Image (cartoon, rainbow over the protein chains, first blue to last red):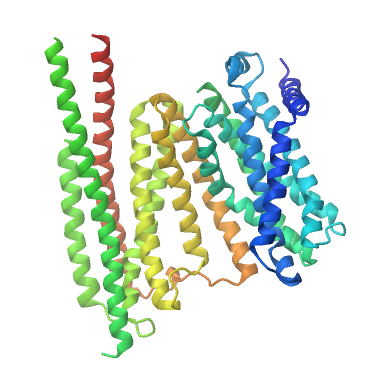
Length: 222
Length: 52
Length: 226
């Protein structure tokens, strides 16, 4: 079976399943908004301070939402032995992985794009001016989160305390990616971004996408 | 010796103590685990012999 | 054979340790600028180097396990990660104390200490994952994958923290080991050797424990079968 077609089919299946129930989406968007509101109560900040923490706060929210979404990715295949069927199917392992990662990517991107205006509203931060550069940064970092997150979702699918283990394992690995995203976002929102930092995101994405594809056979045999 | 030097020496002592305490603590954990494993092993071995 | 190796490594390591103490405290002169606390470098940096060496061993063992499926490699990986994490903890503790003397604060988020903290968290996750998986093959495979992912992160973490620190003006690394005066090199190198020897002895002990554990597992299965 053609790998790319298989990946596409799997991505479409995941997205369609999610779109019908919208459980993950609703949960993640609500969670993101609640955290944004919570943080605005936690600190009393003037305009400069808000601009200074903007990138950090936004990516914290995105990282938490991301963990929720990737956790569901392989977990939803557990009932009715769907996971075994996926593995036994003629689709190559890398296609299963890329399909699922792509689905998570679009879902997380959707959550992030919905949260962005809410963030701008609550914190009085203008983001429309730098929207396209911001979109590039968001897309690159989101791919990094979903590729590593989906890989760990596969690894932890049968582990005790999965909901706890996945974030514990995922976040330390994502820290460099998040640092890059945070710095770039704060820079873009403040008007003094150093775009060459985008190298960090690209390196992370390339390294981990290749690693995940290379190792996925071992992960999915588990 | 000046007070700064004395403080320095104190911290040097803390530093070396912390490092060696961590290492000795680890060795202690290893020894404890070894004992636990050996006990379990002898217990299981005698159980197998009993059954045979 | 293994017991003998453990003893030899342990005794050699301890002997070098004593020799090194003598050199550190009684032979070399005190650093004029930083005072006595500078001597902590002979633990702080060798611990980091040793930890890195063991992490490298772990990633090689992990790759070997994925290819060969031999559990001996898995045992080597977990032993190396445990010992490496312990040395990272030593590095963090001594670095914190140094920072307290140097800058007056116990933690300064400087580039090198923050990288070491990240490493600690990464491999702590590895050590937390293992007990959560009961099936041995699954546990070994997952640990191997995690170890490979973690090791790949090390250069990226360094890149990211350098970026972050440039923006936020945190202090640069505490130690510039490149600028170590020649008189300091012998105890420094000996310090690395001491840690490598003692660390290897610990890894061998840990390996022995792992093979005993596997024996326990098979005995348990035998008892259930009878």
